[in-house]
Structure formats: structure tokens, C-alpha cells
Length: 294
Length: 321
Image (tube, rainbow over all chains, first blue to last red; front, side):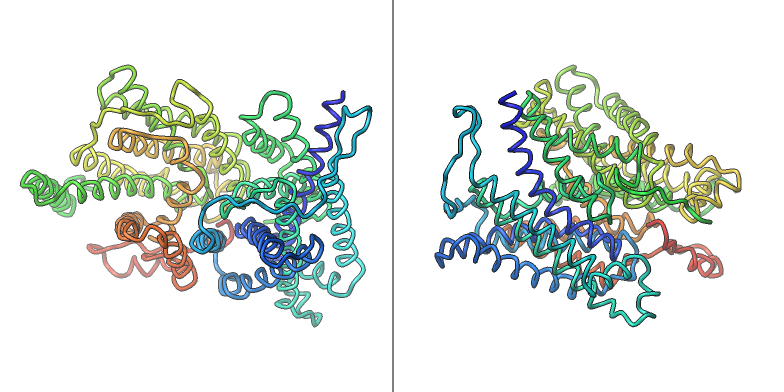
């Protein structure tokens, strides 16, 4: 029971990270139907920006978190403008390979400039542990920070998408781009904005991971990127609450599996669940079934 | 159609001359071991690309797990030759069959999915197979499988590359191949015309897996050493890139793509620190400036009349891929 509670806490933190990355995937897919494989790399860049700011400029946790989100959103917009805009009308497979090429480019440019070694993230949060039940359950303050920041960001996202004008435009473009354009919405701007928001969330996830696990390296974006994508598909790609749900679900499952003896298979479990879900409910757990029209 | 018409005879004679020419050059020592290595890599890449083209280019099913079938073939052959001491030809065939069975096993449930979802599901299967291989101690686990006897040489590579290309070429021109093309163009229409879509999708998938397994066997028995991480997600992408670069649905394109990309990557080996950066830029350039690939959807026709080539222009499918 104690172990279960402890693992729940860990799962919640891991799930927050996945959820934050998955949101970017799902928003981009919802709006231009592109699996943005470079998203995991934006998360990696976010972690490095956080690392640079805290180590070399001695900034605190919150200023570097915000700065890193800003840098990532600029990077996301830049990627969209340079790489994805020219191929918006080409085939799916060409778009996918472009996304992969962008991802490879970011990975190996980072390897070239910052060297492939793992670096240690400085301790920017006080390393305090709260103990419950006479010390049998340890709650790291970092866990609280991660979950809290994730929740705040998600509430903010929900507010942007549902209460603001640009959010309304985003929803309109994701439903029907042509019709939205006819209504006077500048689709290019909306797509840019979507990339900016999604990338900012990934950047936040990067800094949080750096703070939580203390190590970063230029290829750290690959595995969480793939898994966050799995999370987005689990919840139903293109659906924002689905990504959050999928992220937490995947984080929990992985933590539980590795806690109860299957740590070597934890990655396989994530993909196994993905395939099961796709076979039973191809539109994701929260997705609605769509009928194909001839 | 006559089986022994002039065109076929010319092609066969040409291939035989080509085989003996390269063989002669190898025996004379003009082609050194480094060039031989590249020839083997090109051959394996051709088999992989043509077999993936059957699945993705001709049948229109988006697979990101092709390297997994290659790994199944590679491990089967490694076990058969290194641990059980079986002859190479038998282990190649069994590798192909093992990969094809895996293809059927994976294909039957997942091929109901379409487009991106199918891509993700095959990606997932590829990762699962890699992780399983990492955790089975009998085949070396993460350390890799060592001391595989080196059987693969120019003769084996030549025979299997030519056989793969010929079989898949003829399959595409057959009744079954046209059924697959119909599925690519419009699955619902194909089904309405009485094409058993599930059967043909699984058939194409299993055939693609079979040849990928053979490529894996050739690979394992050339490099002595295999490890699960050589057959990861990136390897699948590499194969897909060859197919798209050469042109979807074009066998000549896949062959050309395999040759060109293998040469490019062997040149990039000289600058290891910038290799992947340049590779990604090349990929990006190809996708932006030539998204249809080198040969696009038109097949390379040197002997046919021009009229037929014209008819082929409009067949590019946009929806599912």
C-alpha cells in the first residue's frame, strides 16, 4: 500500500511531463494533420535552455522556466515557417519525412554544439522532502512543483482555447481550414500560434524534466517524444483533454509496470497498450467514431 | 505474353554479364574490401527498399516497422547458422519465412487501420520487437549477437537482389498486383469491385516482410555481429526514405534511391560529427523540392511506347499516403 502510494506520486509526475508534451502533438495534429516528430526535440532544446540559464546566468527556477518557454515557442514558430509551410500541401509521407528530418537536424546540431555527453542540471529547487505516515512515504517538493505547474499550464491552455478569440480561431481552423479562411481567419497566423503554444508547453516539460531527473543530453527527446505521441494517440489525437488523459494514463502505467517487476518491458508495455487501444477504439479512448464517407 | 521475348533475353544476358564483370573485378582485386562492403550494403538496401515499396508504394499501406522484419530475419539466420550450424541457403529461406509469419501476425490486426494510425501501430510493433530482442539472453540481449559466420558475398547478394526485384516486379504486373494497386487508389472502390482488401493487404505485407527477412539474413551473415538497436525506428525511417526518395511505386526508383543514398551515406562517413546534420538537410531538401522522388510515379520505360507512359501521369494518389 505504501509502495503503491509512492508509485502513484512518481507516476503523476511522469504523467505530467508526458501530458505536457502530448498536448503539443495533439494540437499540431488537430490543426494541420501532421505528426510533428520534431516536437520531442523542442522539449530537449527547452531543457538545454533551462540548463544554460540556470548554470551560466544564475537565474532562478521560474525566470528560466518562462524564458525557456519563450525560446521554445519562437523555435516552434520558426520550424513551422521554414520547414512545414512549404510542404503543407504535399503528401502525408513527404510531410512525415520532413518532420523526421527536422527532428534529426535539431538532434545532431545540438550534439555538434553541446557535445553528446550527459550534463547535470543544477539544483534550482530546494531539495526538501515531506514525509507522511512516519516517513514511509516521501513526497519530494519537486513532485508538487511539477504537478502544480502542469495543472496551471493546462488551465491556461484551456482558457486560451475556449475563452479567447485566437482560441476560437484555432478551433475553427482545426474543424475546417477553408471555411475558417472564408470567415476572415488568417489561417497561417493561427497555425503559427498553435506551434508557439505547443512548443512552449514542451519547453516547460523540458525544464521540469531537467529539474526532476537532474540529467539532460541531446538525444533525450527521442524516447519521451515517441511516448508522448503514444499518449496523444491513446487519448484520441486532436483532442486536448485526450492528450492530458493519455499522458497521465501512460505515466501511471509505466511507473506501475516498472515498480512491480517489469521495468525492462516498460517501453514495450506503452506500445502494447497503444496497439490494443488502436485496435479496439482507433480514434483513441476519448475520441468519437467517425464514419467514412464515400 | 511471351516469356522469352527479346527484351527479357537482353535483360538476362545483361545481368549475367554484369555479375561476371563484378565477380572478375573482385577476383582481380580491383574492387577492394571497402567497395565490396558498399556493394553489399547497396544490395541489402535495394532488397529492403523494393520490399517496402511493395507495401507502401504499391499497396498504399503506410508502414514504419520494416526494420523489425529485417531484425527477425537477421536473428533467425544468426541462430540457424551460428548456433545450429545449418547451411546458409536454408537459413535464408527460414529467415524469410519467419519474417513473413511475423508479418501476417502483425498485419492481420493492424491493417484494419489507415494512414497515420497504421504508421503508428507498425512503429509500435517495431519497438516491441526491438525491446523483446533486447531482453532475450539467448540471442545476446543488449550486448548483441556475436560470431555469426560470414557467408554473404557478392554471389548471394546478386542472386537475392535480382530475385527480389524480379519477383516483386512480376507480382505488381500480375492480377494480384493490380488488386493491390486498386487498394492504394481507393480502398472502398476496390472493395466494391470485389477485391478482398484484407487478404491483399496482408499478402503484400507478408511478402514485404519475407524479403525484409531475407535482407536481414544477408546482413547478419555479412557483418558477423548484430544488435537490436541497429534495427530500431531509425532504420525503418532510413528504408522509407529510400523508397520516397526513389519515388513511391517505382521499382527502378527504389533501386536508384538505394544506390544514391548508400553512396551519399558512405561519403558522409568521412565527416562523422556532421554526418547526420547533412543527411537531415539532404532529406529536407528532397522533400521540399522533389516530394515525388527521383522517378515519381512514372515507371522507367525504355522499351515501351510513349503513349503508355502518358497514361501513368494521373495515378498519383493523394488521400491515403
